[in-house]
Image (tube, rainbow, N blue to C red):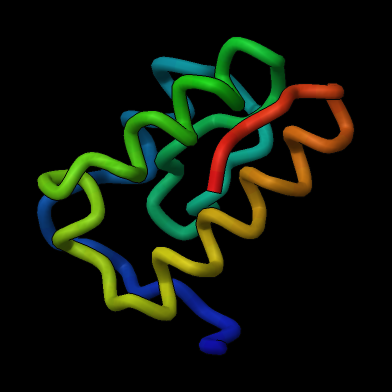
Length: 82
């Protein structure tokens, strides 16, 4: 599995920080998919499973993002599907 997520040309990391603040993101390179609260974890899991949201990433990057969301879900006691 890739250790790094590529910088996307269609987004700016500053936008994620402006919108959510200094929080943990499942995609920390582009500041996408905040995973700092139970609600954000649920939303991140839902969003990364939409084809349009996953499309800019490689399969390995999607797996890495999903793994980070799963870890956050475990921390918050959130049950998510596979």
